Length: 415
Image (cartoon, rainbow, N blue to C red; front, side):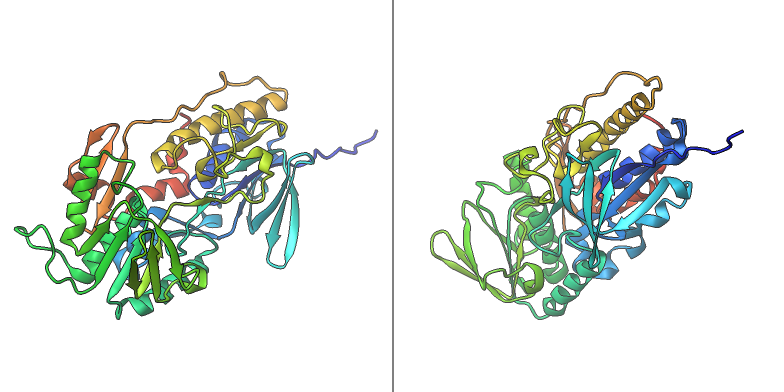
């Protein structure tokens, strides 16, 4: 009697990105989907990430100043360690960068050191996030690159007499507030402006107000708080050019610079920080799958249409919603449920429930700490007092929330 057993091909669930979205979807799939699949030992979740460490990116405006301001063991966590709780055959971590998505042949090319690995996928999640113009404000490469950028910036910070920050969004405002309080202190209770700040810090925005995601009255309150730590805000003004070109980016993170404004005036800066939005990390994706802003086009089920079955995108690399952590946390269970449903159906099993659709929360929601004691914001359309912004976010920039997310405890129950 023939005892030969035919091996079942491995089914790779490839997740590109090792931050909030990628790690969350990996945990959700390993906890709630793979255990209920037939031949579940043949399914492998593969996280591909440029860094072996996950970072709480919102904390960068404070973290870039000094390692002493935030607990480093919470700021960075080792990704593979978070997945040691699962069977080894069901999980693999690849430290590398996706360079090409072949959605026809269903493979992803990944640069791993000097080599390229082509990984076939049965399901694919694009969660590669977005890069910041300043290497100080995000994990654009790996953790060593980020730390070396911080070290270079800090080496010049103690002697800096002028700092220019471009961009009036949350990152620019938070960075200005953190640097202002750290370098200049804060005005007294009866003063609305800090007299004679040690370091001249200027925040420049092309908008009519800073913090365009919040109502003008809240934005102006933020301006008052910035003035208390010696930050001058210039509105309705665009920076047309910076000399030398590339100042504040990559290897020029600590270079003296001259910002040339649209009206011809110039601002001299010992340190220049560009904080003008982000760029989706999607250059490996065919342009036909992208929106005009570079984000992957998805439908309400978070699927990438017209690329075959079981291809999804979520987070800052996706068109799913305005980039924000609360939007991500709301979307993870939706995507996790749809992936489970698709895999069950593909395995010839009965699907659990109907397909779920994601609807972005468009209510005014944003919390912006300004220094280590104040902040402005709104949640679900309601203005939040300064002390509550500090309590929720300003104390440690969400580090109190990330432990359960990185470890998967946040996704212990299906929702």
